[in-house]
Amino acid sequence: MDGDEFSGALNGLLRVRRFWEDDGDIFLREDEIEAEMKGILELVDDVYGRFGFE
Image (cartoon, rainbow, N blue to C red; front, top):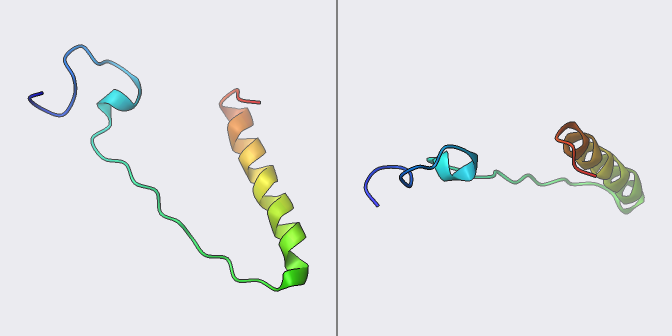
């Protein structure tokens, strides 16, 4: 393959030149875990919903 994408690739991740995901650390007490997990799942649900995923 010559260049940054396959010939004829017009959409999706085939056009992406670089992708990386930064991770983060969350430090909390044991009694905070349940609330934090609920918040994370609500965030994921919100983001997925915006893109039409269930």
